[in-house]
Image 1 (spheres, rainbow, N blue to C red):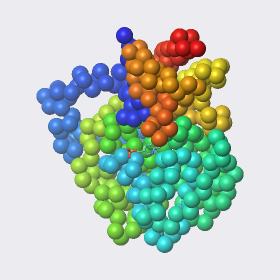
Image 2: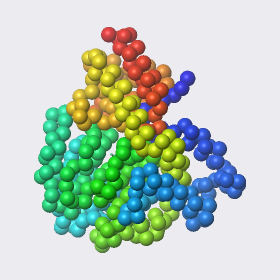
Image 3: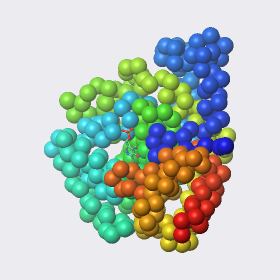
Image 4: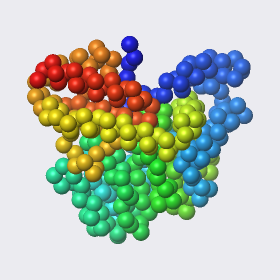
Length: 354
Ligand SMILES: *Cc1c(COP(=O)(O)O)cnc(C)c1O
């Protein structure tokens, strides 16, 4: 039986990448040691690190005006690092709130700068015109894909401020023009690789003036100067991320991933909308392609749904503890067959319990 893992994060990685990592695990390129046992300064490891960066730059069209940083601490480290690096303690910074992660980012930033919160949420949708209330702060931060709420913002907010975005759950899943951004960041464990690693892509003219209290390992100027090796980086996670980048290139790049992701999401949303046994309450123009929360009309059936789906090889469909119900995460590594299997299971479950 095939197993499909719908976990929101740490999430599934491409099967081909896992198989290659297994093959190379104890003997990397005939060296007789694992890549995780190599010095980060060795020429063998530097080749891995540089190839990963080059492939990411190619996939996303990132010019030399931007630094690409491979960092510790997940996405949350950057909730703190962003205000510390890009604002003074007395500066205003603008945060658009569209769900739980953007709210969390604003809360953390308030320790280091003067946060102006602009809540976009109205009913089940977002009022994007409210973003016009920003414009004063050192930057404008938003979250294009709210992993918990299943809410997405597809068009960048219009602003002359440096635009900062938390791409943790949609990086490489849709095409973007990086030149519209001052900085984007992403924890790796949704669409890129193992947990612990985070990527930061930042316009170089914005860095180098961190607040004096900024911990050195969060100082973007210092990290850039040391090619993300100011201290020992998460080497194995960086290697695996590099393998994922190669895999995406082999699939046809970000455009091919984006098309497949739209197709996968449409399959699931269309089925959910076709009856009233299941529901997704998000305004259709802001429905996430990556994370699809859904409820059973009769929540008494939740436990049976979760037990039976697990038995059918459909893993980790339980919704976030704060939302309840179900959530299916459909990141790049999820094949269309996984979504087809989920829809087939949901149909059968509905017939059985109607
Ligand atoms: C998962 C997630 C985070 C937190 O990532 P960590 O690596 O656990 O710090 C932040 N933002 C978004 C949008 C996420 O999906």
